Length: 318
Image (cartoon, rainbow, N blue to C red; front, side):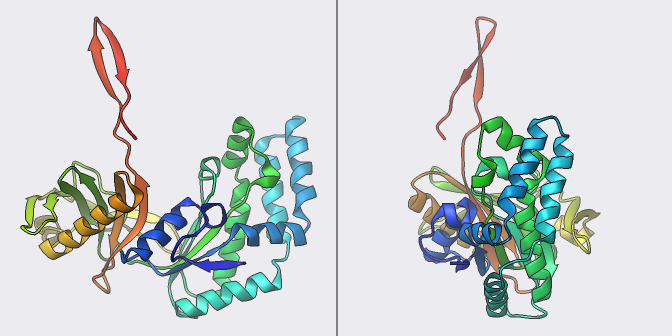
């Protein structure tokens, strides 16, 4: 199967761990951006039909014989760029894009690595508005499996380059650059929420911070952050930092209703995954809707205790 929609119980080996988690959250009723994954099987079929395996193997042999890894990795990516995608894969990607809204609909195309070694420098393409651009971005994501860093990481870990795969995510854009974003994390009976204007995970010192009790008697403790800057999209791709307005600095980012929604989602996610999770959320500035864009297991940082003049690392539960 070339594409699968992010809903239900999906195989992380086919769609990537991040996509599989988002699909599970969607099944729980948590809002996630509408999206489909171009599968690992689709990647393998592309490599097989385009006969890229021998090219990959040859470049890796040359690298191991002394060729610069930058040159070897670029050689492989060039082979991906020149190869033809299977027509059936192109048709499926375009069909999926049509279901997201079709021509003129803004989507993001992202790498969805299966292995941690392949997450380095994963490609992200934003504000794509045509089927042709979506197909081209999927090809670029496939090729990014052979970035210089990814190749080097697999060499260090001993992973097989020919067995590596790169699923791809195609999802509707969440205009957090016009709205806000942050994190939500369950801690005992409270949910801690961090929020700031614009994109990305806000820094602790600068963000609004809230403690939310999501029970029958809602309790919210608010701390307004400075919010001096925000991250926004930079055309044609990328992100830039701009100053916030006076009104943005003085306002709280989230309403009590929005905080209760995020807290409820956090509780659901923790129960479902049976461990503390950090939800990365975004609020679309055009629709006003909140969405969860990623769910990550929360591991407490190691604590160092000085004993007898020697630091002793105390492991924390993951």
